[in-house]
Amino acid sequence: MRSSRPLSIETRIKVILTAIAIGLTGLTVGTALTQGFFERTGEARLLLETAKSAASGLSAAQVEPLLMKLGPFWKEAPPGVPAETVHSSDGKVWRFTLDRSRIWSALVHRQRYVLVAGLIGLLVAVELAVFLAYSLTRPMKILAWGCEQMRSGRWVRLPTLSRTPYELEALNEAFNGMVEDLKRWQDFQKQAARVERLAALGSVAAAVAHEVKNPLASMRIHLDLLQGRLSAGEKESAAILGTELDRLNQTVSQLLSYARPRTPLFGPVDARELLAWIASMTATPCRLAGVQQFWGVEEGCPFLWGDEQQLKQVMLNLVLNAVGAQPDGGSVRLEARGEGRNVSIRVSDTGPGIPPELLERIFDPFFTTRPEGTGLGLSIVHRIVEGHGGRVNVETSPQGTVFSLLLPTAPPDKKES
Image (spheres, rainbow, N blue to C red):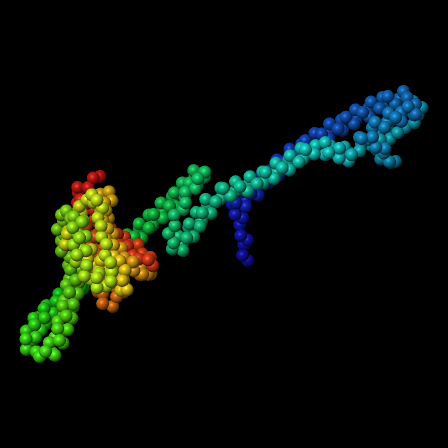
């Protein structure tokens, strides 16, 4: 048999505070009414004793008007009921009993403002209990919601609540700190897994590329020798074959450059010259694809610290990817500006964006969405930028994609602490 669900903290606080409010209100009102009842009873007994003393020296006719004054407190007692007696001088006896119901009625009427005030106080106390229970349990509900979101695999950051107890605020900050640490740890695990894959693929790629490159060079040489002996119709087929050999050789060279990257030759690099060179080199592909190109560098942008040739390769890959993402035309924008001790370079396009399910895989080697692609371009971009001590960030939406490179302006040992 399933046990019933336990009461929540909010419900328990409401019940306890409401019970305390009801108890205090009942005690206050009850004390006031009880004290008033005893005072009225004392007055009634004093009045009766006065009537007894006066009636002992008066006749029955004279006592009757005197006894009328006992009416609010006393009533005539029926036979067989214990009662107080009043005797006249001529021997007549009157029997009276205390009229408690009339005393209570008169007392309640007299204390009606106290009762109304007590009822209003009770309602206010109940409302305060509800508000206090809500304010105390709200941070815990938010924390429970955050834990549920984390369990579902969604990263959340709890909002900072004002006017909350120190302990709950500290718990909130501890949760947010835990989330940040878990995110960093997850990023570290992804990076470690990527490094392991790259190491394994690099070894295989280097071996395969080395074995393929030499036969390709030999085939190209012999194809050039044969072209002089072919007829006009056959030369066209040989040209197509040569083009495909060149494309295959370019792919193998790219694979080798990825598997065996050369050591960067660091030095100052002018961001304006870098973007100007990229714009001139990609002007023809942009024009053929119907893509408009814009570029600009912030005034006073500092020099980069890196390998100029490798940075050109990075920018060339990003711009050509942006052009390829817009087969129906669009625009590509290159921007560079200083950000503290770094330079931010942005390459943005107006293409359809990257699907969310593919976003985490775009830097994996050999992953591509284009049939003619090798899947190494963005992997090389990521490796070169990390080799320069920088970062690559991607923002994408159906309105376009933005690749942001954050590159240092000085070698690590020369940066200010």
